[in-house]
Amino acid sequence: MLAESDMLVLRDLRKTFNPGTIVEKTALTGVDLTLQKGDFVTVIGGNGAGKSTMLNAIAGTFPIDQGRILLGGRDVTHLPEHRRAAFLGRVFQDPMTGTAASMNIEENLALAGRRGQFRGLRWGITARERERYREKLSSLDLGLESRMGSKVGLLSGGQRQALTLLMATLKKPELLLLDEHTAALDPKTAEKVLKLTKLLISESGLTALMVTHNMKDALTLGNRMIMMHEGRIILDLNEEQKRHMTVEDLLAQFEKVSGRELANDRMLLTN
Amino acid sequence: MNIVQLLNQLPGAVAQGLIWGVMAIGVYITFRILDIADLTVDGSIATGGAVAATLITNGVDPWLATLIAFAVGMAAGAVTGLFHTAMGIPAILSGILTQLALYSVNLRIQGIGTDLGSRANVPMSINKYKNMLVSLRNVGHLSLDNPIWLMLLISLILIGVMYWFFGTEYGCGLRAVGANQQMARAQGINTNTGKVIGLMISNGIVAFSGALMAQYQGFSDVSMGRGAIVIGLAAVIIGEVIFGKLFRNFALKLLAVSFGAIIYYLVIQVVLWLGLNTDDLKLLTALVVALFLAMPYWKARIGTRKKKGGANVG
Image (cartoon, rainbow over all chains, first blue to last red; front, side, top):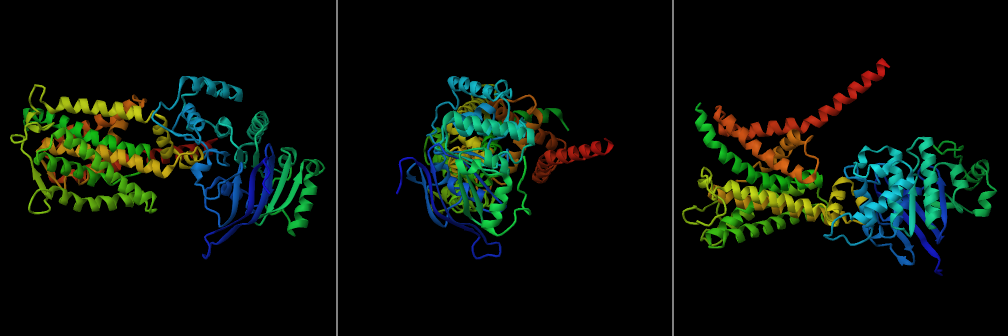
């Protein structure tokens, strides 16, 4: 059943938050998904569809109620979050989440450079690393290479998000999880960060899951697109199908499959 | 008010400040690096004193006794850490629980080797235990047995070791735990273990300082730690307010904490000399610390008000 090239396998993921209370929330109702090595999959869906919950379940932020998660052939279902980190690169919606504000740019990179590795009593950053980080930073073209000693808290949201992306891919992850990582940025900055995302993914041939509110991005980026609704995947398009889709087609599809309109959501329909 | 009387008190204030400075460096690790207000210290400082005094009066070498106090302090920190991470108790409450428990533990420790089983106070005269590391009796001397020298040396070594440790791969990971737990976990750092280790190091240092304090004053008492956390915070905050702009480097920031403790004790000596009743000291300390803790909050509020005003004008 498992192919060598399967990078991520989700089998019947289920999750209910606060079961048995008045704030009970059924978030995942049976997610099945298999990603091949090198797949770049965009994820769309309305609010509360379970997109972020799915990403967080993969990352191990909370234990799932039922189902299995395989990463690169390993069963990670019961592995704690910090151990799964060895296989995952993550970028969050809030630019504050992915970096340590009170630490330097180079210290943040050095932390990411040791993702999933044993941390001992050797010095936290070497001269050779510093050179490597300087090169990587200059490729971002944000002028950060000359500010490596600056606290990350002094950077703008876009700069922090670009840095987080760099950190997430510094050590090649088996899977890159992008959770609406451009949603909190202004359109111009969002475009820049998205361009960088494309570049980093194609450069290293990464496998990636990208949640987005932007339908056009969802259609133009990556080689596959899935749509979620009420905690499960309701539409799964391959590269070929995606190419022939327009945003209008997508909306119509959504209505057909879910029996609801997307209009009341904060979904971005254009641009 | 005789100025000579005040001047005579100053060397003692410096020595006491240095000893409390060691303790305040422990507080800095939890309060500023791990972002945890750890109230264990009121108990663990007395634990350090209790362990050292009990061992020394039972014939153990003072250096060894002080190091064992460090280890026992680490164990106290581990208890708080496990209350917090393994049992899900809020950090501040975990510290309070350990602090309370330590009161009984300290009474028991001080009772070791006696018929009583527990003791509130262990006297250890410098006349009897001549090889104690520091003693207030020598604080007026201009010789090498003045405790200020050894305390200076110990403070500098401690700062050096902490500078090294928090620069290592593991130490950087601990700083990340304090700065942003979500990010730390995403980088593969076990935040729970990190917090426990951080609390252990901090309370080890605090107990170490308690051991020195007991030797300095010539006795250990179960209540010697009352309000220690506030004095520690006072030292951290005074250091930041006075040297914050000047000292950017981590080692210098720790040095500022030590200076903060010395300044605190010098100021205390002055206000006592000016006629303040010793009984009112803790009230004064608490109010001063509260005021300084409020500063960043007030500054931020004034900042936003100004911004709003500017927007209206524009």
